[in-house]
Amino acid sequence: MPVTTSSERGPDLHTPLSGVPLTHGQLPRYAAQFTLLAAIAAGIALTLAGWNPAASAIIAGAGYVVVIYAWSRTVEGPRKARDRLVTAVVTGAFLLALLPLVSVIVTVVGNGIARFDVEFFTYSMRGVVGEGGGAYHAIMGTLVVTGLAALISVPIGILTAIYLVEYGRGRLAKAITFFVDVMTGIPSIVAGLFAYALFALVFGPGVRMGIMGAIALSVLMIPVVVRSAEEMLKLVPNELREAAYALAVPKWRTIVKVVLPTALAGIATGVTLAIARVIGETAPLLITLGITSSVNLNPVDGRMATLPVYAYYQYVTPGVPPEPALERAWTAALTLIIIVMALNLIARLISRLFAPKTRG
Amino acid sequence: MAKRIEVKDLDIYYDKFLAVQGVSMTIQPRSVTALIGPSGCGKSTFLRTLNRMHELVPGARVDGKVFMDDEDLYGPGVDPVSVRRQIGMVFQRPNPFPTMSIYENVAAGIRLNGGRMKKSELDDVVERSLRSANLWAEVKDRLNRPGSGLSGGQQQRLCIARAIAVQPGVLLMDEPCSALDPISTQAIEDLMLELKTDYTIVIVTHNMQQAARVSDVTGFFNLRGVGQPGELVEIDETTKIFSTPSNKATEDYISGRFG
Ligand SMILES: Nc1ncnc2c1ncn2[C@@H]1O[C@H](COP(=O)(O)OP(=O)(O)O)[C@@H](O)[C@H]1O
Ligand SMILES: [Mg+2]
Image 1 (cartoon, rainbow over the protein chains, first blue to last red):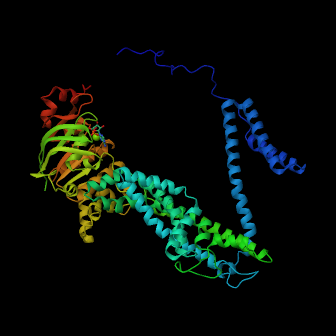
Image 2: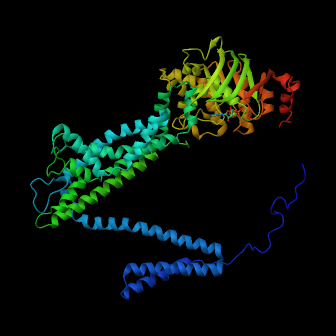
Image 3: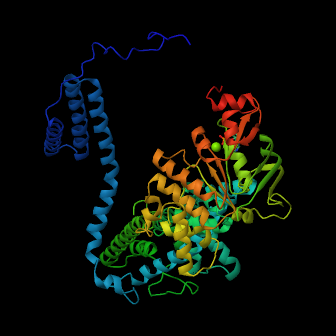
């Protein structure tokens, strides 16, 4: 083999590259912070001078980006300057994305806290006109309907995912995947109409039942459960399945005892998030459940109240004076947000508890 | 308990792709048989046909016969699951079940099959298997800890304990030491020499010294040519293969003059 010379092999790594210094200038330690403070001060000054607050904030932000970039470029060089520029832009985008979230939370808490009292959580709206009353019936209705929806969707969703990952080959699997994708995109009102039409066929028009709402929600929930469970099952290394097969464990037992436990944390998280996704649905429940002012926990017996529909009706038919009803609507919204947040926390807890342990 | 395996004119396919062609060999009980050869010549593929793991790949099939003590493993009506009950396997990468403790991992072959066994009996099986795998002393105080918390070498010995807990007649090992450090490798080689008094062991290895150290018989696999299927070039006593192989390709391969 001929000895290759360094010129054939690209850059010579032994002599240092000349002209590129290893040190370069640095901005003072709190340069970024001071620039930011200055920008904020300028923004406040503009607002005080009578400018639109949003416009002042944009100008302050842009000013910060320009100043820090120019300053860093002259002192630190182009690479550092680009780093600071992108940091500023990314942080700005993050704050912008956070804005609606914070705004919603502040508004809902601010308006909802007034009726966030014991009465709200212990009384229904039976016989209530004007002040007082609560959403006990709606909270229970939401829990019953969503619980039923989960009861229907979780087994179907997980079994479908198992079929797709462990058994599905060929046409049928492709078709199922396709229809699950299609189902993901179904507008929720269509799911409600489907459930309504289904029951109207049997019970005649005008039928309202808790189970109808649960079925409408399942239509929305099943694709989410299938998708997340499928991803989680795919993450289970094939080596574990082979290890089980090599121990003469039949396929179904391998799935039940090895694959599912390994993926359990992820599946449980996915299910919880799917529940959180449907618990705030209003349109399908409006069609299938309607509203009632008293407690009904029987899902096969007439109308049922749920939190989103409750909030909706309190808002559109407030009565005179409207204030007490509007306050109840806000508190219902706040309760819903708290339930969803609790579900998310539970999801995290579950994934921590069930995650396969690697360290003893 | 140890079984003899006889392979007759075996062709192994992945769908239409012929991966290995015309393998015939006899594997003696209570011995270690090493399979060597360059990567991609079908050693793993061949090994996985011996316990019918090969057909788990969609479209994979074989042509030919494999006998275990005169029973045709590919005969009509043979259940692959019962074949695997007789022929255990250890993989290249240690793969303990991550949701199970050390104890449960060793007991997995019994428990996952729904086997009912008294707690004390199961305890005995677990201890015996871990002792045979030279792991008992290291883990006896933490049997309820997760198996995946062990070091790589310990995990591999755990997998060996798991495989021998169900008392198979044959133990297949596919490069069991290639992910391990020299000390763990030494431990597993010692283990193979101990285990061969009770089991028939077939090991695939890329390490010539290892083949020379642990095996009684060595088989050399090679590709017939570029784009052609793999084949068993020769199989003989290990001492013979490493001193006076009858085939030129074998000699080139073991002396490092390959390719
Ligand atoms: N699951 C598979 N599907 C299709 N071809 C495969 C599969 N596994 C291995 N092969 C092919 O079979 C041949 C033998 O591979 P393998 O048995 O892994 O070789 P070795 O273990 O000797 O390195 C290779 O050509 C490889 O590409
Ligand atoms: Mg291999």
